Image (cartoon, rainbow, N blue to C red; front, side, top):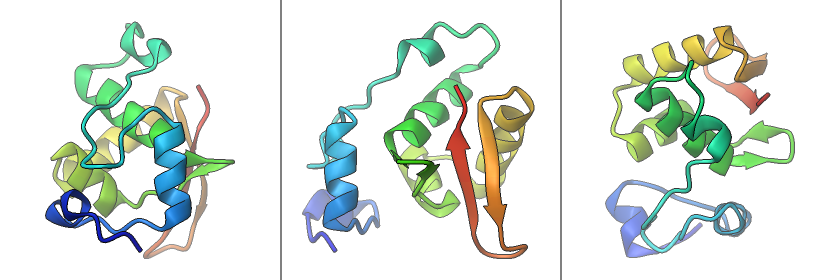
Length: 115
């Protein structure tokens, strides 16, 4: 796990593989200094600003066939409450941007970007 001070500041622990995936997704892991909003989200008329923001983080954390970041991690990154985050994920699934590919019924969900 990483011991980078900025990651610790926001309560984030990343494996070296996750750091590399984030770095390769155009985000500076060293303190998460910027986020690239892909044009398909930036110009999407059916997404509000929070949905665009969240999709950008989910896409950043998309590794192979799913998003590795938990709801708690996404909430820390975005500053959203867990309730707001869950509502946005439901809305994004309804709009066809996300698909839930597994759920253990209680603790773990796996989502992937469709668009």
